[in-house]
Every structure is written in structure tokens, then in C-alpha cells.
Length: 213
Image 1 (tube, rainbow, N blue to C red):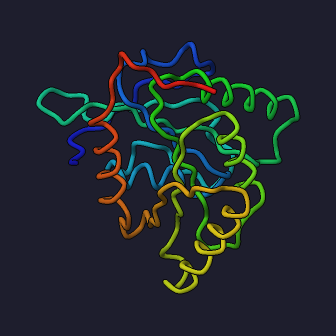
Image 2: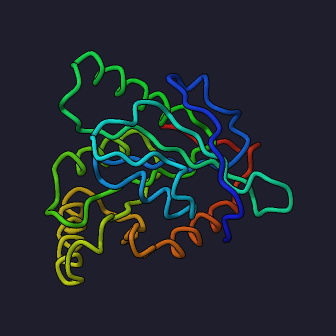
């Protein structure tokens, strides 16, 4: 797949404000400061698409971007930048509101093909990430993992951290979904991610919405 164009569509505080669910949709989420905006910009080859901030917790809404939405482009699809989880420097009320918003999005957005959960490859497995994956599983939401910042460690250190995370998952999961190792700096993993999205897009049928549990 080639990304010919990527454009901002809307930022929504409620699922009802999101665009019509007539195109395949892929959501990106992770702990605050996991490198989500940088990854989105790398995938789209647009350094200014998602705002990159060194301050955790900047993303607070459901942000939709339309990929290949112009004529004569490949299949159009939505990329969604979701608020990060696990950021403590917010009020309890704000955290509850975000949690409700995210759960409503995951459980009702019928064109959502998968949730890409970003995991920091520099560090050992974090319980908050493992717990979040369990929540997605309980809701019947398909997901894949993206290990970010692979350029920050040696290949062996990155491989060890990824292996340890997958091993922790196997304690609770019979099946481990496909995962990707990436670097926004080196564009590592971009081709594999886009190929995967392209494969999923081929099977998208807006008349057959996803079945929710």
C-alpha cells in the first residue's frame, strides 16, 4: 500500500460525533508518551499530521484522519488517534470520562477493524499494558501490538523486551495476535504495518458490521 494523502477530519468528544462508519478504521492507543504521534506521522509520511508533544496526556479526544481519501487513491480508510491511558496527572473525573468515552468507542464503532496498542520496547512488560489488552479481550475487540522506539536500544535488548512481553501475555492468552516492532526515527516496521492494513481493507464490507460481545 502507498499512502498518497492523509488529512485531518475531526476531533470528537463523543462517539456520536465521529464520521459515518463507512470506511475501515484503525485505532492507535497506548500509554502516555509511548510515541504514538511520532508513529502516526511516520506511517503517513507526514511529519505534521499528528501533533507531537513531550508533555504526556495531550491527546484528549477521538481524532480521525482520512487516509487516501482523494480520487484515484487506494482504498480510503480512517486512522484514529486515541487518548493515552495511564496518565496520572489528571483529575479522577477526567480519567473516568475518558474511560467511558474509550469504552463506548471500542464497543460501538462497528467499522473498527483493529486496535493497535502501542508498547514501549525499551522497557520491561508493564502491568497496565497487559491489563488493557485483557479489557479489549473481554469486550471482544480485535487488537494488535506495536512495539515502539526500537531504535533506542540494541536489537538484542529490544528482542528481549518483546519476548518477555509476549511471554507474559501467554500466561493469560491462548492466541497471540500479530505484532510489529517499529521505530518512528528509522521508519522500521512501516512497510509491514501498511501491508497488514491493506490485507484487512480487502475484506472490509460496510454492510457486514463487526459483531460485538
